[in-house]
Length: 149
Image 1 (cartoon, one colour):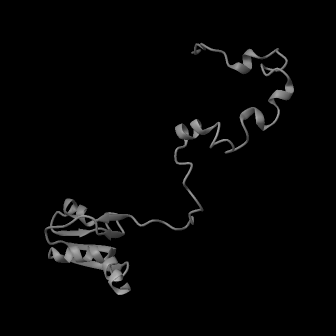
Image 2: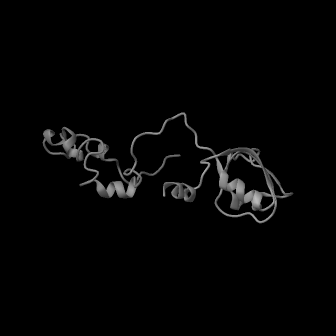
Image 3: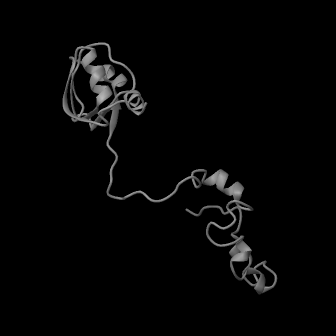
């Protein structure tokens, strides 16, 4: 089966012509004909391209250590959705750390590798328990401010 070609490619159209539509051969030479090489002009004449095609280009600085992996985290507020029988094994669900955003109203037994101090306090305040290692700073921001006075 042969596909119908509606438009011929430019390179096919230009066969037999001398300079392929660029006029003098000197005009196509060098990086100036494409507005500079690489990222040059991204804050000037190529800015609309950056905004449309690569909006995350600016604002990044430095580099990320390739072997460091971020822990898969979950918040205290999401625990009640996952809890079926009052016990949750977050390691089995693929989470490594429990963070403190949100609240929990029923007692839960949570098994997780790491949890923050605030998250532990919230789970225990609801009558639950935690198995794992507590991480983070031992004192809160408010306690730190009081020490400074």
